[in-house]
Image (tube, rainbow over the protein chains, first blue to last red):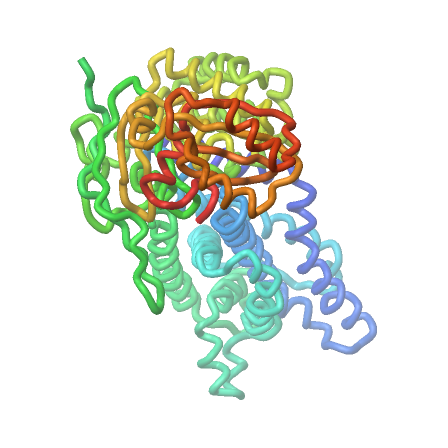
Length: 255
Length: 318
């Protein structure tokens, strides 16, 4: 069973890396534009405070991890079930379809990390001068990385089983952008206490926990959610979304 | 001695939609023997693909049993899937991969050792006449090539039974005949084949036994020869002509030697009462009606005639 599973993971890796530049472009473009605008242009012309790049550094990283993972899982699943049916050969392999879903999530985690890795040097390069990043609470780094990847991949799985191919264009303005803008990307979550209803509402946004967790280790001097809470948030969302997503995935494989 | 490989008992499937329940397959029973080519014949919408979906663990039956090699197919999903293979009607090849990679990854999903997989891939690429295109991405493959590659892929894990859903739909006549030859070759090598089709020629060319499915129900099951004996009148005269006029048909039906007459696509068909009909009389009548005869042939009744006899409808119409 494990060898079938790894074969499926390798198939996805091969396909991703075959079109690596396409992948890199898709992953890097959105964070690049945000970094350029909020991290370079606006601070340079004095429209945002000098500390703003530092404030949004963790958020941009969180966003890149989340968006790349979601993208790499949700869109192929939606297209596979709705149009290309490419996945059928894997769904009919001698293992339960839930493992096919897990293989998709594995790829999601890997691509989420890769998304973060691509954006890091971009951030340094463009915002370097305005950035004050430390690396504290190192012990939390690995669990945060793992949970951030899993949160992203499980949300991708869930979305992939919900969104039909004709709805994919709506995914960007209708889901990803609201998630990014309200995911504690450009503001630290504790500061939302000024708008209490919003501070509670944004807790349904999985990206919030990812951004806040990165904030805790990269820019700890900026106010952030206690890291234990953001870890717990990511873990709970992962379990919930992976569970529902896998059930839906299996239901679509064996009708 | 014939040995049963697949046993289907009281199989039914009902799909529920918001407002209604649709019985797509209704209480279907049949057996498939090891080594035979078994055909499921019926028009579009008869329930063929749904039945095949259930036989291949893609759709859960509402009720009924499917026994493969004496075990329920749902009892051990992993084992069942190693024994079966399905070639779907639609193209579900992996477009991100080359033809050879499609075969090799399939082999890996089925845990084949890599040296054996490579050998089998070469063999089936050759068998399906795809060696030259083996390392091209499959995105640009024609319908016929994609179909042959799907069959090659299905053979990689050496299934006991190969399911082909409408294998020649959408293929040009040449590719179709080529594919029939491939299917016969495979069967000669020992693969049991289950195919669905809405073309009457296909089971006539290929199948040892044919089940006729209509509106989810099995109407008949036998060898093509035996099935054709169900039709009264055994010969059909086809006349290709440029001008098919409606009044011709109604008048033809009144002729003493004609049981029935139909017309489609510039061809008149006369179902003759006599096993050795007097063609001279028919030709004389056609000339008297000023019908321009382009060609004319006499043939034994077909499975389409059987289908019409059993259901009152043709295979091509819903």
